[in-house]
Length: 170
Image (cartoon, rainbow, N blue to C red; front, side, top):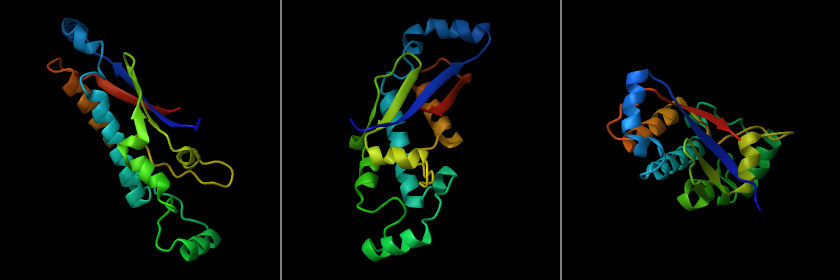
């Protein structure tokens, strides 16, 4: 099976007794913060950000992709004229920017993942050896805030100012 790029979301909730008591009254919604369509919205946000990374060669992530080596750039221009970094056959980009090229995991109580199926993406996401890291998915502050907004919207009326998404790649 092809290796998937996993982006995992953990939620940490903080607050005083009043907030916690208020949260207990809405226990059905709090127990499943990724329910009610929230995970689908998060999935679309992550895929949209990955698509933007391809359009901007990583600049949208705040980590612009390292340019191609001069030798490889010349070969690529001769064989695939006009194609940007990480786009040769277009297969990887199309897999990444299509919702069908990834999936949202079945969320647990406070964890969810978006998994990209394209195995080549994982090499570029992490880099290694001579291959520079050129991530298509980066947990930016903007993405974190949008995800927190979806979680807050999914748990209507509870006042989750204490929801702070913590991101890490696995």
